Length: 445
Image (cartoon, rainbow, N blue to C red):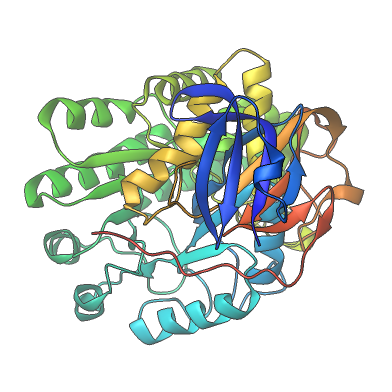
């Protein structure tokens, strides 16, 4: 059965214009500007988008949906539902679960879980270790989004900090390498200093001084050097400082295939928020200064930063409570990432075209995702509709299993109305269609 999204304001490929989208067999079959003659489509299901913006579904290249092994925090079913409510139609999930996703067999297991439980499209990173190079070499480039390398503190055996192991991974990976860059020795020295100063009562405002800008830049610089040496396809995740942007500038000048991602919380918060939010905005890498935040926004607007994502990483209230040393790092964000970016647009800090570019188009381009990320004929009908409508993030409307958000009490100006995945309405006006399942993303290496 055909569907028609009529009378919407499309935002796509740096254009904002009024048009109608025809959907058939999971695909966009036509985009019709001007007036629509509905008599040409007598049996079509009509979705009236009058007064609404219509964009490609958001592609989030960094989430932690916590399955398997950590499902008290979150899981693929719950995470994908929260994503759909936020206009996200595809996710790429990280390997630091239990057991860590460091073998192709475990990668296959996660894909099978998602095929049953994910209501949006999915892919999973294979985690690199110091001794799983053979698994990395054999990863399927058509179904695996990338190799995740933790070049800073991580769980289990996924911290890769020996230069010999890093050299081999960067030299031989057949896929994009996505890195978490923080220098562990620098962090440990800083932590020892603040323990000496405060004992066990380190205030949360010290987090960006412990996981410092120097720790980020030193590790990101090493990743840049290794990728430059081996001509590796490198994507540096969750950039948090002005300093690291110089690496992307250098890559642009030298023609190296090195890109960067920024997360919504690094664009929304600055270090003054630790006073009110405390450990609830404790992320790794840390939220830093207002100068850093503004520099990251500017890099988004110029295209120096390619992707806006979430690093959605839920923890239970218990895990986020207690003192700084006890509280886990990370927080939930995927339900609210697009509305937060639209709020930054409302404040005049970015544009709607830039948001769509960094959250929809460039993730698809960078990962070479097949037929997604754009409103185009022949592309999968992954689509988000939203409108200007004031609402406030409150416990009652939070969909995360963990039950909290660092945005609680925040008023937002735009609200997601409808999300379609492969042409099917998965979310509409607060209600879910539980029969909709996502697909394994395909890539064109």
